[in-house]
Image 1: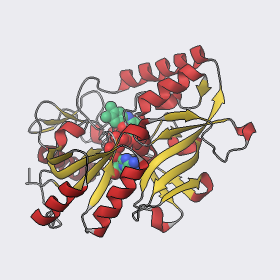
Image 2 (image 1 turned 90 degrees about the horizontal axis):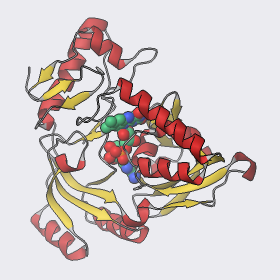
Image 3 (image 1 turned 120 degrees about the vertical axis):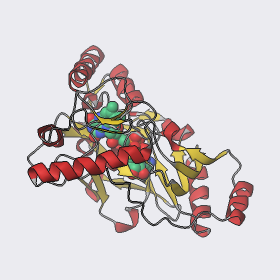
Image 4 (image 1 turned 60 degrees about the horizontal axis):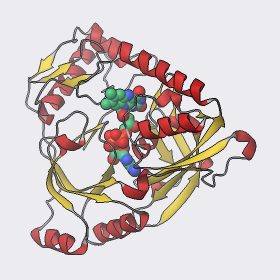
Length: 323
Ligand SMILES: Cc1cc2nc3c(=O)[nH]c(=O)nc-3n(C[C@H](O)[C@H](O)[C@H](O)COP(=O)(O)OP(=O)(O)OC[C@H]3O[C@@H](n4cnc5c(N)ncnc54)[C@H](O)[C@@H]3O)c2cc1C
């Protein structure tokens, strides 16, 4: 296989900026963070710095500082759909925790009362926690998300979906902090959802941080909701590899076809690059069989794209975001 083609990297954070950031930020900074510890693929290069923000005030303060000092940054969620290449991430990665994990009923949404109950969840809230909470509260609508391991912020950003439904279908509003550190709440009429993508109508929000979302849910019987969750989980376990490091489906499904079918038809089940392998159970899963490096995974991704293209004329597009 050909070596991974490295792209031009932005310049590193200067020593003076590092010192200034360390003096400015009261909390911990994980310098030179090993991203294998922050991604479900359990692989990845290093991020120059990783910072956890626990409240909106902290987040806004941090973003303003980073913007004022021209330091590149990006927010990540639970790392279940990202991969940082072996070159690493130049800049600061931000993880939302603390207040951003909260869930509350009647989040003051814009949905008319007849449409259902609005539940507001912070962007850092793990989806499994939100789905379980809704089940206990007798609120139906999010069962289809059972087994998706991301955060609310990641799921909204990716318009995550399963079984013919997607997050965008049940949203009332999304909360943002823009790149100047200003908070905004945008009703669903201001958002365009498409396959694995959210695009706010206002361009200024395109690279903004999602801070939370309001979901419109229906009252239901807790036992029945929890039973539906168990059924979705059982269906998932039949089709997907369990107990292995992966990012779920690696490629987007091309219109009218399935990436898994194309990869299987190209004879690639079990195909490997080092310790990264195409799963035997589900051909659209790249699994880390041990200590695979990010570059082994990227090499495998490139090779799959090349071979599927040769076999079918279709160029697969990664669903996983490469940072
Ligand atoms: C076993 C397994 C099964 C999966 N099944 C599914 C499935 O059925 N359906 C599906 O759609 N996905 C699935 N996924 C993929 C993944 O879980 C989803 O895409 C999830 O929504 C990603 O959330 P995250 O918090 O992990 O985001 P991350 O992977 O951390 O980030 C994904 C992207 O979102 C951005 N982002 C994250 N948080 C924010 C924020 N607060 N504000 C702005 N941008 C943000 C990141 O910068 C990045 O570009 C699966 C993954 C695994 C490992």
